[in-house]
Picture 1: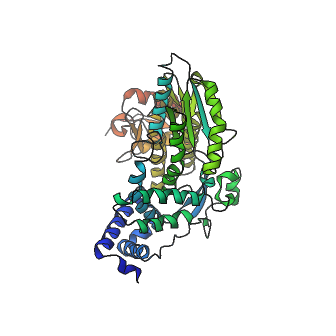
Picture 2: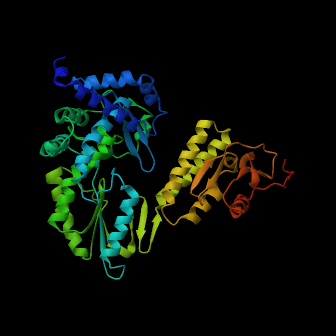
Picture 3: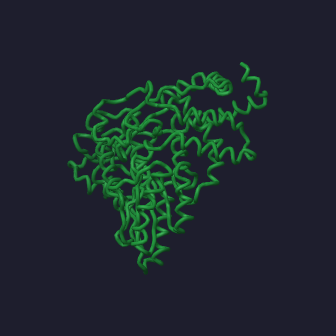
Length: 452
């Protein structure tokens, strides 16, 4: 209890209030998960206990849950316990503003008002600027780091974070020693210890060893899935970003986590940079360029980046995103074929479909969205949902209607949906209703009733 006396009541209250804020940040979009609900059941007691553990230096991360996700690409995820997610947000809220000032503008990952869409727009802007609006030659060099998160050296990362915070200690509004204690606990925690494996051993088949913490080198690797891992990923590569800009004067450079692009009018100059970049990454950051992911082409060939294909005058959705959207539709159709979807499955449908529509609406994809939905989505789902915003978002209807009301369309596999525009409000324009009818090609002899 001696450590407790080092903190005044005001300092303790500040830490507790900041933990409450971290809790509210952590529960966004996670409030209905089992861990979040269990923590919220005794919210105040849990947060006060967590504050005491932190102040008394007794905080210990709980076991993580490990599982595999296949979309958009196969990855190994370690999901931290909700208590530890609160601590991650606690750390992030303190140190993110400090490091945000040190990052270059064109580092896009896990930053406010940036992200994938900003990164795509910037790379498109770079190509247009370097080629003087597509009138002169320029070349695109895209590189990737092999197993980035699994290769990050923990000691090197911790020293980078610590040194920057010490350098700015006079400007900090939090207890530096306390935050460094939590950062050290987070970075050097081994999520493999006592982790809970969710899924089967076969789920890991096809996952490269460079993408698994179970095969990481000693004192290396951060878990994908933690907020702090995303921030630490930016901090780890920050020195590399500044080195490229200062050493080579590369004006057109952007990075998203471990994928980075350099654009220059001279193809051979870009080619000459590859061994220099590789040497710096290996000698300074202990990272390796992926030998199979080196792309150097004229700008007219385009470049795949962050789920899009950037070409002169137009940006497309990548084929992988299209394929994933189609698979998501088929997965929802299978549910509708097997049984009447539950409320939870209906909410999953809404989240899944709107996530893809939310990505695609940033590009000129109206015809693609229209075609994929009207030609592939089971007619049954229109009983519960309608589209709005020009095929940009699914919305849940306030009520459903009996299958005998209005015009009945016999959907695939015997599923029914109503096409009464006045009652169902399926879509925002009559032409869209006609498109559904025309594309489904599953109309039985119409059974029309006078509306009640």
